[in-house]
Image (cartoon, rainbow, N blue to C red; front, side):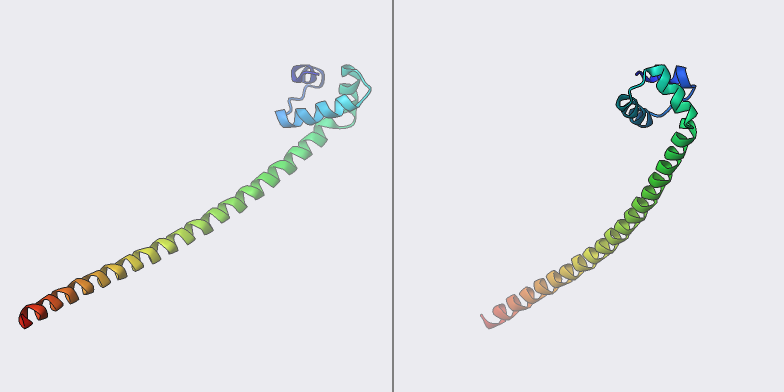
Length: 114
């Protein structure tokens, strides 16, 4: 059954994902298109499908909230690591300055002893 045929028979336009489920159910049945669509309608197919879609939307919204929360945690961790790296970089720069000063003092001592 084509999606267009289903829509014409039921007046309901499901999403592609929902239609795939409807087609799987239709293919498992022994009914022709017209019989299946009438039965689907009588069983409350729109109500059931709408409820499934609402549940799926709620699941996706929950997943989105979780992923946003995870993203914020990762951002915070990145900021912390960036700050630590900056502090370590500054510490290494200070060590480099001290090393250069010690080399200059060493050279001055060598020059004085020569």
